Length: 253
Ligand SMILES: [Ca+2]
Image (tube, rainbow, N blue to C red; front, top):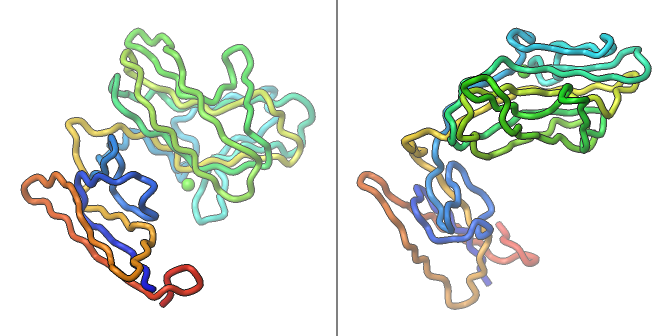
């Protein structure tokens, strides 16, 4: 018995469900089809290699240390830490207003790790918030987009959020902060590579991409590959098939 793995390259418009493949690069499912991924325009990136320049910090009673620190992977990160203070802590670190395009699809993300469980964050009367604060042309606040972290973790985690910029928004402020939970002595939060990207308009697509299917059983009669594709001038699709004998229920060597 033989198993095969199909490798499909340079895709536009293949009618396959997203759960039919086990690896991909620069392709994305759209309306039940698979297409080359659209490109994003990076409008904000903070890696903290130059410290907290351009960020506004607020720190209730100065109990927390807020600054750049080594992230253990060769670079610097934003670190919020309590070395010796007891009781109520609260902080906020906020970016300057970042110009945005109303109605555009955006992608917001960052890396983080923390000794605190950060599944539920609470601010105080509009201060110490973790959210994207959208501002209209008059500088007034629109409905914000909150973001969440997760349980305490030693390893770096990724957060990524994809939504639409409110139609009336002309600026956004990235706000990171909370009143609760409190930092106990020794607690810390680290963040890095905070980024905001807008989907490019008019659409610009990746030049190439691929997907790898899950292993498919061939049985005795073999398999046929067929596809339904929309290939604009200058584009092409290529298939590769790798086959292997079955070994303990999976592909062998
Ligand atoms: Ca960094």
